[in-house]
Length: 531
Ligand code: SIN
Image (cartoon, rainbow, N blue to C red; front, side, top):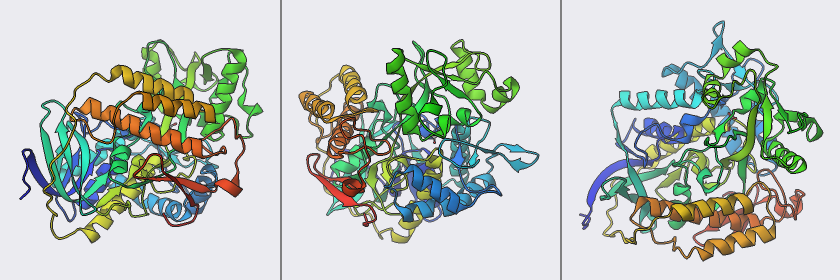
C-alpha cells in the first residue's frame, strides 16, 4: 500500500480536464476501464469547449473531401504540420462528428440538410454549427449527457492537479488539492490523460475562460515530457473590446457571413493586406489590425455587419447578438469594436497520433497536446475536431496498452506551503506577455520578458499546495517556455512574428523548437522527423 498522510484513490484511467478532448477520451475509455475525470472547475462544463462559437470543421458536405480539408489545414500550418497527424484528423473527423449526431447533437440544418459555414483560410463552406453560435456548448452538453448515460465515469470537480506522480519513469497518477477544503488526494491510475486545454490566461486579453492557465503543459514539462511549438500563439482578430466588458469572442463565422473590418476612419482595410481580405489567415488579420491601430492612433477597429440581413444575423448568431446587446450594441445597426486577443496555443506536449507522450503512461489530447496537426497556425474550427478525434484515439490506445495493475509508489507529495496573494503578480505577468511575447516580438522584448520572469523570484519547479499559487507557477512556467522558444526561432511564421526577422526562413527553420525537462535547454527537430 501507498504510505501517505493523504487520502488515496485508485482508478484505471484518470482524465484531467472535462472539455471536448477529455470527455471524448473518457467516453471511449469507459468501454473497457474504470474512468475518473478530474477538473479544477466547479462545473463539469467550464472549459474552452463551452465558449467555442464557430463550429466543427469536417469534410461532410457533398462538395467537400478529406483531401481538400487536408490541403487547407496544411496551408494554414505554414510549413510545420505533421502530415500523418493531419491525415488522421481529416479522415477520422467525419466519423466522430456522425457519432455526436447519433448521440443526439443537432447541428443546424436547412430543409433537412446540414448547413456548412465558412471561416478564414477554408476554401469552401465546411464548418458545422449548432444553435447558431452555441456549437461548443451544445457539444459539451451532448458529451456530458453521454458520459452520464454510460454511468461508468466518475467526475471529481474542484480538484486542482498539483503534480503528476511518476514511478520508475512511468506516470502513475496525480496529487490533487481540493479547491475549497485544501485537502490533498493522491489518485493512482493505470494511465493518465492530460486534456487541460490552453493557456490564454497568460495574456491580458484572451478569448479563453479563466481556467486556461497552462496547467497541463506545466505539469507535463515538470514530469519530463517533451514539448514543442510553444512559440506559436494564435491571436483571434476579433474579440469584443469595450471598456468594462471582458473580451468576448466575435466568431470568424461572422466574417464568413460577409462582415467587414473598418478602421477608425471607416475605411475597409483588409483588401490592402491579403487577397482573402477579412477571411485571410488569423495572424495576417491580427497584424493588419495592429498596423491600422498604429496608423490611426486608436485602440479598436470595428466589425461591420450592418449591411447584412438583420433577421438572419440575429438567428445565425444569437449568443453574439445577445451579448453585444447587453453592452448596448445592436449588431444589426451598429458596428462592433474589436481587437485581437490570445486565442489558441498551437504547441504543447508532444504526442504521436495515438496521444502518447514521451512519458510512459501519460497521454495528452486537445489544446494541451502538440500532435503536429496545427503546425505554426491552426485552421479555424479544427480544434473541436481535434478534441473529438484525438481524445477518442488516446482512449483506444490506452485500452490496448493498459498495464495489468496500478504500480504503487511510496512517494509523498513534497510541496511548498507558503501562501501568498498572486493576483498582482499575475497581472504583471499578463502585461509582460502581451507587450513582449504577443503578436509582434523581437529579441530585445523577449530577453526583457525572460529577465522580468526571473525577477519574480518565484520557484516554479516545486509545486505550491495552494491552488492559486500553483496556478501562477504554471503560468510562469509556460511563459518562460514560450519566450525562450520565441527567442530561439529567428524567423516569422504562422503565429510567431519577429519584427527583427520578418521573413519565413525554410532553410533554417523548417524545424520544431523542443524542450525536455529544462527551460534553458532548447533543442531543434526537423519537420518530418518522428517526434
Ligand atoms: C471562431 O468562432 O471564430 C473561433 C473558431 C476557432 O477558433 O476555431
